[in-house]
Length: 584
Image (cartoon, rainbow, N blue to C red; front, side, top):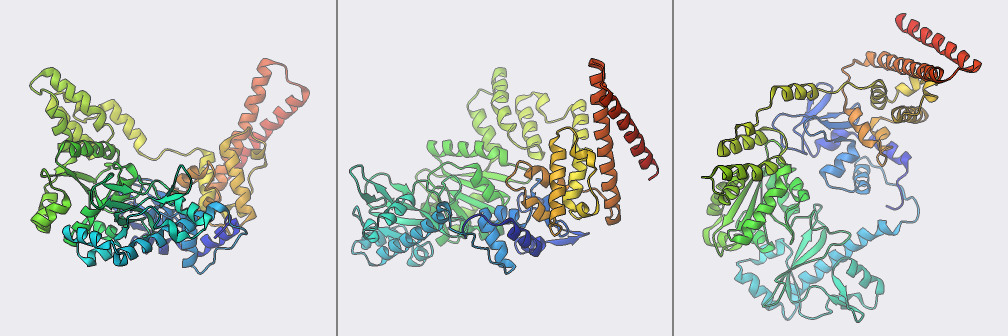
């Protein structure tokens, strides 16, 4: 697909696609009244708060506020780009995404790089099977207890010794070399030319969530540094977003309700050989928020596995600090520290799957690790030591989202320190403030009108906006209402989803999504009269504002005869509006 997708095609696509079918294929839905419901796929919950409206062609979660159209859902759930989501949705309803002319270079770059990486993966696997030096690599894999079957399953390959094995596959193509460099496979020499990045290494292909090869990791054979080498950041590979083996492990992670995060490729492969299929590995970088969010979408529990030495403890603390803001209600994180000199690979071979699973079941919960570490660094026998604990723990606990875990952590800090004000209890005044804010805020008349119009676009064809609104004082809300009305009136076939998609790249997108999710508790026959009443209120406000402006002008200076005439007309107009409203 090339160029920008025409709006008319998106309108047609969203008119044909059924968001209920799209989501139900990925998250089983149950009928609940006029909508469909499920436990939210974007956060962990026991009581369904995720609703899908066939009338609006829109989804909304009342727990985490995730919402959007069928396109948005595919982007968020399947981790697709906008263009990929459109192609996926179009394929499901038998539409072909139109060719809009010459492709932009950036539209072609990703497919080219992915094809080059796929070809490199075939090259490395072929070398493991046929290269004269592959015996050393095969012996190494056997020494680590790996079978040929598991090596084939994980597409393990071999990069022979030499500076230009991969470079030579390009022939004399300058473009191919440049693309290999962009894909992170080769690097430029300062003196000119290119050389292979991976040499004399066992190769592990790194896949994205769709199973496409986006990078490689290489373990050196023999001595040398670095021991492990990853592809650099490229247009298709971002270390902070990808996890090794996630595309294979996601089903087992969801089935077991837990993900095991280890540090190396060999650990993942060895664990899989022993029947532990829910393991993933970070890619030479510390755990990131993106890693956590991807895993928590699949399961409510994560177990981090680290060496028990000082470096492992430091890495675990970094992971703990990163995890705190992601600990929404129901999520759990634990830390498994291995015996000295062991890694998951060696331990599972020595103790077996059952014992390692028992170790995982008894891993240290994050709350325990947090307090154990802080309390080990201070003298809890001293009063100022307990005060120090409060100062160290309070900023960490504050990162945890409001909810039961936050309150329990605050209570534990109060118990450990003796500072009762940290018990998590909310003062009465603060409780009153929270209670006032806990319910849905009342919408302004202009927000109400926008919300009704975006949920029921047909209103634009049934009711004209008051003429005075177009000439009212500049107001972003009124401007958006006028724009929506013109758009829905000019395109009467637009449904809610298509209307929202028109604003995807604008600053009003989030506002429209929130207002689309608003439930006005109206029957179908009440929508039109309520919209008409809301417009009358806006018109009355516009007249009142115009009167106030003229009265302010009169207080500062005498009004001209024209101004006096306009003021009299405004008073008459307001009286007429109120009489009409009283008469129904």
